[in-house]
Structures are given as C-alpha cells and as structure tokens.
Length: 329
Ligand SMILES: NC(=O)c1ccc[n+]([C@@H]2O[C@H](COP(=O)([O-])OP(=O)(O)OC[C@H]3O[C@@H](n4cnc5c(N)ncnc54)[C@H](OP(=O)(O)O)[C@@H]3O)[C@@H](O)[C@H]2O)c1
Image 1 (cartoon, rainbow, N blue to C red):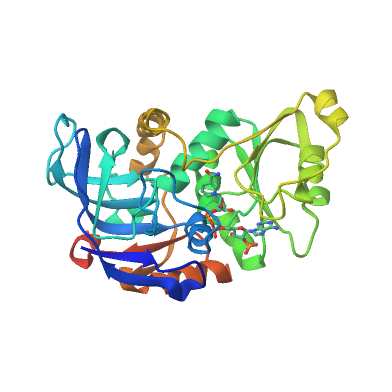
Image 2: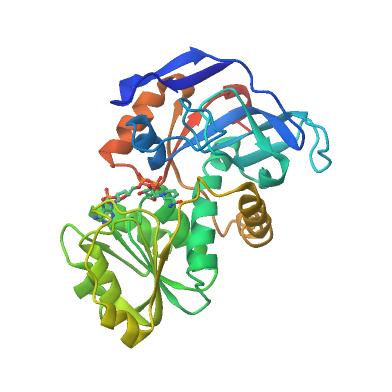
C-alpha cells in the first residue's frame, strides 16, 4: 500500500510517499480501506520530531483519523461487516491506504456526510466532547470561551456547544476568522491581535474555557472565569510553565484541568466513542453540527497540507483524499 512517511524530522518536504505492507488485522480489529484522512496540528508536531507516536502506532506514518470502508473484520468482531462505511480515531498511521483499528472505536459515517467530511470528525469531536463536556462539564445555559476559534478544534467546539444550548465566545487572529467563528454560532469572537480578550469579555464572565494557548493567557483565563469556573487545557502554544495566583482559584472555587487524547487507552477511547455516538452523532445527522472542511489535498501532497496548516490561514479542517473513488460519496 501507499503511505506518507516522515523520512526524517523537519520541514513539510520530509513527508514522502512510500510503499508499506498492509497492516495485519488482529482479533477484535477491522482493516479499513481508507477514503480520506484528517490533518491535525499534532501531525505537524510529530513531523518535526516533537511528538513521538505512542507504543503500538506506526512510528513514521502520521495521521490520527480516517474514514473509509471496512475490508476485513478480525476474529470476534460482530458489530461491523465488510463494506460498512466508518470513521475512526487512531493513534497514528492514518496517512495511508489501509489502517487497522479496534472495532469498538469505529463510528458509522453519519448519514448525509461525505467520506471527506467524516474524516474531519474523530480527532476534533473526541477532543472537544471529552474536554468541554466530560472534563469541563459544560451545561446548557453556561458560557464557553474557545481560544483558537477558527481551528479544527475551535470550529467544532463552537458548533457543538451552541447546539447544546451554551453561549459561546471565541478568539482568533484575523477579522475573517472571527467572522467565520460568529457565523458558526459564536456570540462574539475577539481578534486577539487587535484587542485584549480579557477586556472584551470581562463583563460577560465565563463558565468554561477551552485553551490551547497557555503562557500569558493563563492569568487572564483565570480572571475571566465565574465562580466554580473550569479552565481546560489541550495545549500550551505560548508555554506550559506559568505563574498563577492560587488565591483566585480558592476564592472562586475554580478547576484547572486538561488532557491529551492520543496516549489514552483503548478502554477510555471505546467508552468515549460510545458516548459520542449517543450524544453527538444525532446532532450531525440533524445538521446541527457540520465539519468545516477548508481544503482537501491528494495523499501524495500531504506536504502542502502541512505547509498550509503552518501558515495558519485556514479556517476549519484540512483533509487528505486517499482514494478519490471512495472519497466522493
Ligand atoms: N490535547 C489534545 O488531546 C489535543 C487533541 C487535538 C488537538 N489539540 C491541540 O488543539 C489545537 C488545535 O488543533 P487543530 O488541529 O484544530 O489545529 P489548527 O487548526 O492548526 O489550529 C491552531 C490554532 O491556534 C490558533 N492560535 C495560535 N495562537 C493563538 C492565540 N494566541 N490566540 C488564539 N488562537 C491562536 C491559530 O489561529 P490564529 O491563526 O487565528 O492564531 C489556529 O487556529 C492545537 O494546539 C493542537 O495541538 C490537542
């Protein structure tokens, strides 16, 4: 099979097309013929050599999510059959023509969505559902602030929280990105290059913040939170070592938490997939949530997808079309 490999740590050009063996489908696993693969920021960190694959995942093939058709079901798989259309979160190896995945983590391609759109779902939906709703415990009627509102994660968080009855605020780096975030349902998106998000939102007060920035945002995040507010970290683009005022946390009984998805075990991911099937899939099928695909690239041009992601001019997701005959559905 063809796969994109990281030939050595470095710039996007190190992503090269190579020939690899089709992975073996073990018990409780399915072999998927990949139609499309989502591109995520962690893939860029992996390409640069800063985010090694966890044990068991291919070391040099990036890709955390795919959509496609089940080709083979391993021993013990009863839930799926060859020919089923699925999308799935994987621990790596998605930039290739075939992947294996544990059957319990696969989700059906939602009705009405293309394979390209379905490939854009798992990484962002799993991350947002877990961090905003399970960890951050966002409830209907509460307010959410999403930093990086135009990112794949941000566009998903805005739509999902809006659909479930929250007032969502966001930050993004251009007026165009802010407009896009507001079109997706954000009450207000602050262009952080032109205004201070704390000053803009202090009169609102926020119940939950989904933060990928860290660094100098942390103090302002803490000050923005209402009593019992929750600050959830999924990255720290501006630095992970910060000074905080613990008395603020005590006074307003705040919670600071965070998580990384990739290294979590199968049991966790299977349970999360089931929760998402019950709570998020109906919203997708009712068109209350739609993955925002900014641009697609052929698998062989994964380097261009990474270059665009690093330029950060995109709004929403970048997707690789792996099999054109399947990807157009
Ligand atoms: N913990 C986890 O399990 C997990 C899982 C998946 C992703 N993540 C993280 O979530 C983030 C988004 O991932 P993605 O794949 O959706 O990537 P992406 O689309 O490339 O998004 C990155 C975003 O960061 C924004 N940004 C950079 N500096 C900012 C600032 N100071 N204030 C507000 N926004 C800023 C960029 O927007 P501007 O151009 O507007 O600045 C861009 O939209 C990444 O940092 C990724 O590592 C974490």
